[in-house]
Image (cartoon, rainbow, N blue to C red; front, side):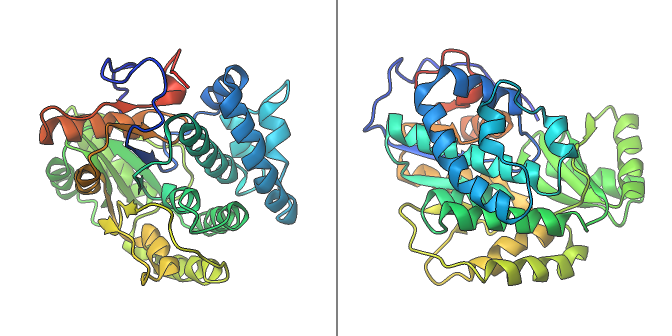
Length: 332
């Protein structure tokens, strides 16, 4: 995961409500609690959005026996990422879900409702919630359901600084038959999934070839075909929640397309456990909406960085991509 430029001069210094935009909802690998807390303290619109969203999220947290996150995040002693990771299962996922929905809500207030959204892995739940397909409470329940299921998925995830083709060659060279390409972020960023022993082999092969390899701080595997039973369990949980029509299109990096009204969304969300995610194709798809800017609706910048890389290779000129919570002085 690479950090991109902190500022793009193509976006005006003041919000323009009518500018067409696309919101990008990242997965779990790039969640910065400190950037959320810092931005919420200095940005009234974001602070209001965090307070409103987490009022609904915390009702679900109480229902599921988890700590109240809104007052914790906005209080005098906010949690660290480690605090969230050490809390009850699902606490970190509820925090990430709520943060993404709140950032989306604040961006919508400043720049207008997006023309479309892109959901990557876990980020699909927040993207669908932002679009109104799920209510905030049911989106939070789905996020917690997924966290509980993931807790039973052994293995891990390793980020590689190489292309998909090179990653597959590394897997073959390492003899890591149980490892798979899980996520393709861009031409120089891939995530592989599998049992821990297989990832150790992949990381050693990467070191030998001087390819960057970083084990993600996530205690589970995902996007792996061996997780079929977990996917079925998650789909069964999500089917209990009502859904509404989307207020704007949502494109899935796992499905590789826009979701439609006839999609079995429970099954499609469960696909995130067993099928790979490919970010570049859906980024190119949403260019059909002719956005003037793309915003990362999360707390980090890795997805924005990938979007810059993908779109720069596909378009001239490419629209600017912003990661608001990582940019000092971002114009809310």
